[in-house]
Image 1 (cartoon, helix red, strand yellow):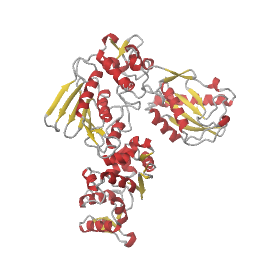
Image 2 (tube, one colour):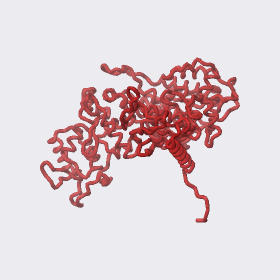
Image 3 (cartoon, one colour):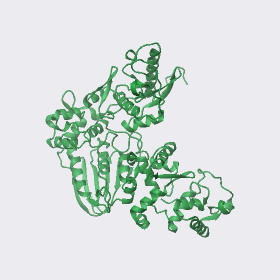
Image 4 (cartoon, rainbow, N blue to C red):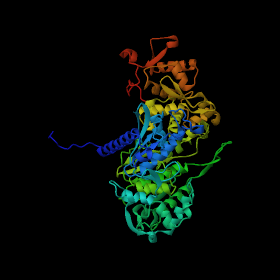
Length: 618
């Protein structure tokens, strides 16, 4: 390589920013060690914090704990402030912010990072460092691409040594001066005079429906637009504002209602020409609401009326197709309802971007148009966690429906399909019994439970596929689900090296259904007391990740007796699927057919039988 030649390092800008933040942290700590007070040491990008909840009566310092929810909420608010601040910032936790004394902290960094992410959808880099033998936690926060609201729905950034309120307009004006800013934040030539009155009325309706009603819906149009971040200081609308509020030259949304897939079209319409995007969204929602019938649940279930398709999941699908589409393409986002399936398909122009693909939509987030996405969030159309694919998954599976289908097709375009129908009441009852109650809305628990209602067991590797996470993260999620209870008993239980649905969960589900056959017709718990076809499927699943199956294994998976399980496995020997191992009695086991002739197999989960011998169904 030529001497003194400059080299390129991917992500070098981010690494440089983090290095600069660490250097500022070092300076602050060095000045504290020299006896300076926090008021003299703190700066715009570095804040000193004493861990919340560490003081008892009379200001006595209490012992620290690895998991302090008060501190997690406190720090989530401060991280949100730093994320909104130009260049980001750092928090040093474990310092008396009046005297500068180091009091330390025992917070678990991985737990803290996850708790902050849960609260504000930002995951800072969390590091532990020791100063004079005292443990401190340092949070390094990168500048956000979109405004970040704290746990109190406030938008703040750091000015000097303090976090102060900022409105969205000021945030996006600043963003225009940064590299990589969003085209939707550009000023347009449109003004308030160009706005459609219908769009203003729709916006006010959406604002009144927000969980945090701050009276914005009743403010002047200019104030509404300013606080939504859609009006510049010069009085012009941003590109996002003009798109949402001004009449459009074409339909950005089209609607069709079919009787069956590829059958007769019962109704079809493009959004009205000359209406704004907000009005087109509201019109499409009204059509969807009319098509999405209500059903009455039997028995005494707490929620008597539900929709064939969860409305929140349907709204997320439509808004995903609008907000994340490619606005340089002229064709409309198409919304199709199929009557017979109670299914919804949304097809939007433009493929996946920003590293998102069909295999990581649950965990990877990227917005093609951050300013537009932020305005939609501020209007209350979606929650502050983003345009929630995870919400779609959770809403669907907790009613017993299939998870959403998201695929990229030639064009490119993205197709989202939700298939509803009558909810599976036993599944709803099981979810409704989960404690602690906040886990009922945990998408990880929902997806693990959905998997175990349809598959006899789950491994960390399978969990990684289902949750679109690493094996280590899936293992953590399985333990989280394992800590949940129903009726005082575990929701799921470990068995050998896998997890299974607990007996309490299966009994509660069966009780709600009244008959196992009813559940099986709905595709739930088909592996319990299975028919011959399903029995073969259960054994093949087990042998795909194990080198042998015992009567005890099969009995645990199917809730048969040991004797019944052994007879079932012996029938598979007769059918040529299995052969008996060399041991007998309590150690008796069965191997895939042909193993004894070809020699012993290594007992290893990575040693999967050939596809020809052990084809795994579905």
